[in-house]
Length: 257
Image (cartoon, rainbow, N blue to C red; front, side):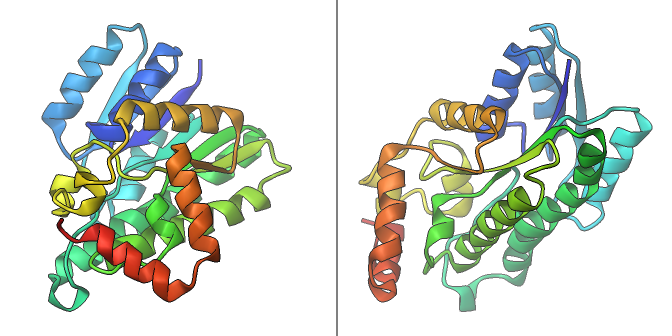
């Protein structure tokens, strides 16, 4: 039985992924900020017949990734699948955004993800097996006025994941990047863009469908998975359209209707 470590596991995509892995009889290590929510999730999933360990901490703090790694090592747990799902965005013009929101997005979306990958990947390579999935976003394929930092962090995750996937292609380890579009989770409310055209007019996917797409992608070892046919078409069109036009459209969908 393999063990899966999932960050941001107390809700949204991370929670749905945890349920899918539990049903497939994978043991779990779940990481999130809320100890109470993690306890509830652990109780629910242990009823399926798997072992669930929880680590309650905020990965947006600098020491957190190393703490997670050290805790897993102390418990003698070998992580077979790492799901870097934790992340957040913030809506607003960059010049007016609080510094803690700017740096917090970079710390969680980029630095924590990179550090966790660097900590767990060498052991997977040494064993000749393992899977990593980094959760990015279709936002990473274009600039994002009014959410400039978030879009930029997700561009990093896509580029980083594809590069590492190439580096480890003959090692027995796979690296997958999941790119959801707008999804019905608590993300939009926290990011303060739940009133945007993206969520109000263009529609969002169910979190269950996005998680299932991600689960299938990581288990199949695919490098890049864009959830939803309409999101795939959007990504393809943005590659050929003039960049100024793509940026204007990106701003339009982020604005309130």
